[in-house]
Structure formats: C-alpha cells, structure tokens
Image (cartoon, rainbow, N blue to C red; front, side, top):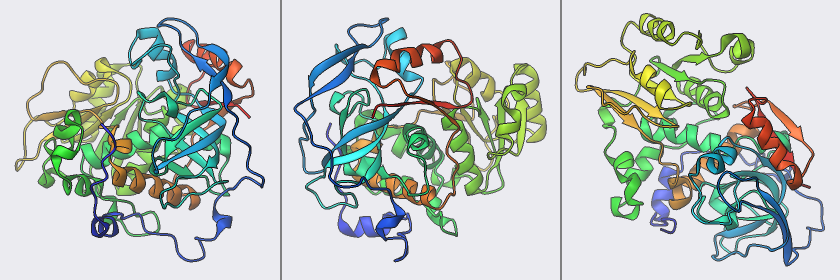
Length: 417
C-alpha cells in the first residue's frame, strides 16, 4: 500500500503540533548543508547484497543507483550508516527479508543530491537523517551508496549535532514516539515549552480507518480508549533500558511527565543510564526480584510498561501490571520484540504500528519536524556511539561484533563516505 495522503490543509495546520521554529531559527544556519557543488549522481554504485539467509552480506560493485518514483521522493548520498540489531538478526533467523538478493539497513545520514519535486522543507544540499521503515522497498535501504526516501521521512541534521551520532537515532525515535503516542495515547501537543510535539493519535483517528494498512488499523483505532490515556506523574516501566529505543523512550516519557523505571544490567549500564531519564534503576539479573521491586515501588498500580528485549521478558514485565480495571481503565504493555503468548485479564498487549511513519504522510512529517526541533534545541540526548571507518566493506565485521555482544549500551555506526 502506498502512503496515505488524505489530509486536508486544515488538518495539517491544526494537527501538526510540532511548534514551527521562530523566525530566527528558520535561518539556514540552524541546519547543516553540504558545501557546493553537490556530488554528481552516477549510474552505478556499490551495495551490500544478502544472497540468502544465514549468510554474510556480499559487497557488490556496479549495482544500479535507485531512482525516485514520485514527486515526494528524494535521493540521498549516504555518508554514515547506523546499524540496528535487526540488520544481523534478520539474516540469522530468516525474518524481515521479503525478497532475495536483499539490500538491508534502516538508518542513514547523508546529503540530498536530488530534491523532491513536491514542495517541502528540504532541498538539495541538506544533510539529513533518512529513516527507512519500509523494509520491502530496497531503494530505501541503507546498505548502499545512494538511497531513496520521502521528504516526510527525513530529518535535517542541526548544525549543533554530530552527523555520526545522528545516524543512530532514526528508527529508534520512530518506535519510541509511536509507542507513547499511538499505543499509549500520549498527546505531546499539550506540553508547554519549546519541545511541544504532535498529537499523533488524534491525527491518525481523524483519518478514514480504511485509508490505513489493515494490519495496523486495530492498534491505531481500537487498542486504547481516550479515557485511559496516561497522566503526568504515573509510573512507566521499561525492561531493557540500555537500548537506543529505550534511551529515547525514557527521555520522551520524562518529557511528558512519567516517572520512569528502567530494568537493566545495573552493574554494566547504571551510571550512564541514571543520567538519561530514569527515576529508578532495577537490576535485571534476578527477574523475580525485579518484578517484586516494581510492584512494591508502584504500589501494585503500574499501568504502563514497555519491553525492548523479547517475549520472555515481556511476560515477566506483565506480572507487576495492575490486572484489575479501575474506572474502566486497563493496563497496557508494548512488546517491541514480541508480546506474551498468554492473555492477561485487564492488560492490553500492543505492537508498535511502525509502518505508519511511511504510509501516512502527515504522521511522518509530524515526527520529522518534531525530531528536528528536539535535536536543534538539545531537548533529547543522542545515544553514545562507536564509529567504524570500514565503509560498506566493513559492515559484515561490524555486525559480527554485534552478534558477539561486543557492542552494548551504545550504537555502532559505519562511515561510508
């Protein structure tokens, strides 16, 4: 299904709650640009191809440069790739690979070498974060020298931000934002101050439900009732709080007013995470004790929880959730890597509808303009990173390091050019 563009101008003006920058901030100096001239676009490029599951990616020269196919699309020359766990898990376990040979990769920073024909906030020469949540379209993949994106799926990199670090934030920010906004119903437009964001749930529910992909309609329209939406001051528990998504999630949750519990390897990550949006760190070494601590601290009234690891830890995190409805309000658990197999009375299990970032134009644009503002105003901290200068040829070894567990608590990014 192509992206949904059924949003009238009045809705855009009303729903795009990501405060526009003031006149001073609209100057070009706010965002990074590539010095002229813009790099020439060749007809061929180097790419990494996955020939089959359980194999390494193969460095392949003389591959065709992807072409834009609509007025909303643009072309980016890739400078830095942000590696994600799915980049090695997908080939190892055989999921998320719609065709073979396959080009993978979700997060890049690069320069726009071909601007979209449609009117937009970006232009040729802008340095942008390009976020590919559309894994079926290999034109938009990261493991190549040039990649296609839609203008509403790119975020300009502020002058104050590191390009390398910016390559680590894309998909993680989308997942964290949609988790809080769509699954939990958090309305960031009600917040005071310069970081005020969008009301994504309100935006999505203003659309015709038949205009969305059918596999996310239930999550977007039916999974949470507006009377259940969280209030500032309530607790949220995040299991696996050292991942990039968890770090951004906790920052956004604190920004909204949640009190945040992170379940992590305290000995390994405690000092660093204590400075990034956690009110309480709980050691993950003993699962039963972690559950008991969460239940005790929240007085048995925890209603909001997110697991970033897998089905087993999601099942553990469901245990301290309040199971009895209060005034018709249920508890809610998001499983970023799977939800518990067994339903739990009074608890709703959620999966993040990540595809609405690219399927629903208004959602993508609201998220990208908000991220631009959060980064430009230093409202969120970028993850710690490790930079690999190996280029595309070095991606396999970088992914092997991730497989071996050598990269923990930070993101590995690879410079391509």
